[in-house]
Length: 439
Image (tube, rainbow, N blue to C red; front, side, top):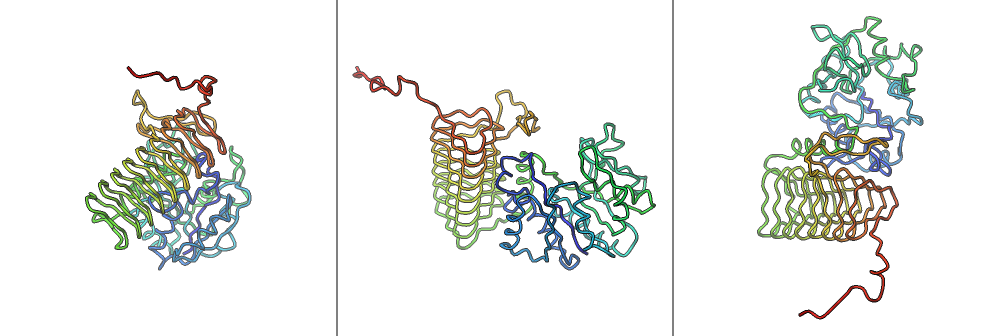
């Protein structure tokens, strides 16, 4: 079989992280969003002979990433110059999919390995029959998704996009087994209310023609990565699943005396964990990173390649990307920190509101609740903070921005912006600071 993966979107709700990184290459759990999907497909490479990757936004970076990673898969890229919808993306691959069944996967869906395995096994068994498969999932708010109506025996009757009164909690979960009769509905396609050509319309056309679809229910963890806080969830889930219980410490890593390592912890080659550091897994410390002394690295933390985590730093449930330095006496919790960032000493990330309510974020100009009681910051690449900077919950800092010493950041900082405390005239005068003899 071939597999078609959609990876062309701009990921505007994930800005500022996606301003300089395409959404498929956003890091989670020691891999990327698209990397996790390709890893699952590579486990079934005996059944998957080619991956067709539909790219668009920042496509050159995705193509470069594919070339630089040994994925053990045959990958063909197609370019969706204008993102005109999921059906439009599939139609680009029409000539490559004639006469066979194929997998179709939304590139921003993350799924646990067991459900991946179950779906691919059922797809392999079903490929010689007329039956198609639709991966489904029960969710609390089905009105946000395409709701799947079914008969009692799990046969699909219709997909209803974002209904105000859903008939069930069952939604289309972003993975399906299709055949080339899906293209017969092309001429009947009409733009949706969003102005896009939608894949559910093609499937509904097939259903009206009597083409059978059966549901495959996902029972483990499943994530639609649409908002910044979903990245924190994804990091938690992938680290919990992917690091073996016994841990994985590379023999080339250096672990000083008086280092405590507890639970599943991955330490990459040439990493150095200095004396007095305390690490509780699941934690992934990548190649060449230097930690300590006296650091506390708490569960579900990923620290990228060639980072420096200084003396007495505490990091909890966070993603810290390559070549970032976190200066001594700093705290980072429930946060996403981009590459090539530098935290001045004593920089603190707040991850809890005083009233303990869910942390809000501004997404595309609108205040939204993350639903999370604890949530820190989302920082783009090449950001610097001065000493003792304080960053409040749910704040986003654009790439190439800088925060001055002692600044308290209460709202989002745009890219390429310097925020600092401006001294008043008295502070700038020769008579300041005021001094007198101590008695």
